[in-house]
Image (tube, rainbow, N blue to C red; front, side, top):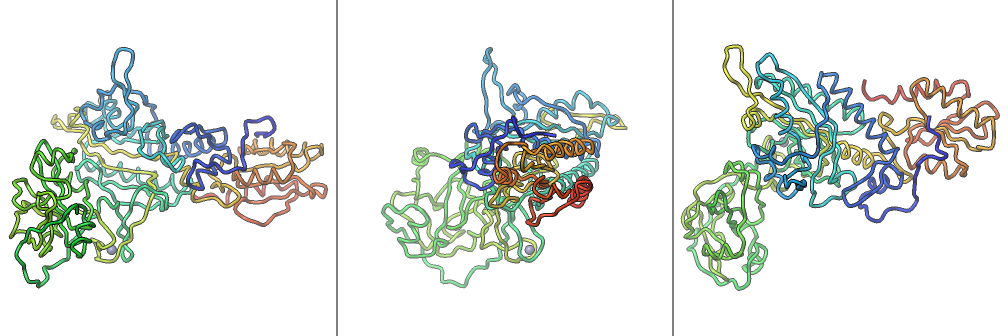
Length: 570
Ligand SMILES: [Zn+2]
């Protein structure tokens, strides 16, 4: 049992001003965490117990499928990322530093590379497969916008697992097992997730799914069909085009003066037309070659689709000066007479009598027809799914909702194995590459999300499985020796049945104690108050309003029954 008197217990009534969302404010007010800096937090004793409870559930579920735990370093030699070029992909989001000998080190944003290299120590033959490893540790990311409390941290706590199999069939089985582990974990810790189809970022086209929680504070966008079951990450949704060419009179192309008119909006306002009559022309640079990308005026470029199409991880956007060097101007870029490769979104094909930049300052062309007035080397689906797009599965209407990604599982396949030489010999002495899967749960994100989903005006309402303490015993009058003795006696008995309780033995008023217990969200409150003289104590659940009076001899039984009834999964 844990007595509150003389403990490091901090709650505050004033609302922190530097947090934007209710859950993040409550985590600080309830003394679960202390904010050191933007995106950097300390877990205080109560918050740390929540972290441990979630970690224990993850360990239990991982162990069930025979995944073994290791602990990797967070500070590593940057060279390990060279083969996968992933530091370039994480771009400016990685923390790197130098040691005394000028060696470059990285605070790991991810651990796939280290696990691939580690597995080489074990794997030689097919007999060494299959196995799975996991760890629960810190990772680092230099977030552009660390905000929303624990949801987007710079140093974050994650459980990440990796499976190693001889072939696709083995990987499929490992993936399915991990999928179930994730399902069970989220169930047990009390998070409602939706499984969102996603494509792994590395162009191998293998399956990848995200566990997302619907939340207005999410930084992920999910497309959900209102008619069928289609759910996918917005970046991955195919925009199917059902346009047809209208029976319009094709006009002759014309150069027009458009002084200081640059953006799509400025052009359409100036020419009094729909923004979608304007062709959006972008110049990109891939492997030192310039290419032009065309989209309909209001469409947004989906960079992921473009990267996959061009089979590249890096796309550069030239500066204004660079554009001038190659004979065009920002705001006036267009495909007419361009010698570059031109890639257009499929919608552009249907733009008749359109408007585009003239590669000349203060000029545009109007009445432009694709194919007639300019060449398109290839058409492809390049646009980011928007509200005007329809479900690629059933053509129904879709909504775009925000989600917090709390878990992500994906089939890596053999790409890292090829990069790092993770091979084995099979039954016929042939060399094969190991097929890997990668699986991650963001523990801080889970906590941030749970509090966001489970609170009221008085404080946090922890799901019982992860609450810092399941039971709080509140002594109304600590000067009453009998109450005091009974509370600690009950505490010891609860310890014996594995339900370590919190005992509020502080000298504060009962009002302060109740307010604190509500704020920190302990699911079951047992109060030793006025009715104690009649042999009863008061039991109140954090998520219910009514009080129950229970005979002192039956308290433990009642508590056990409540906990049993709240178990979500075993
Ligand atoms: Zn649909």
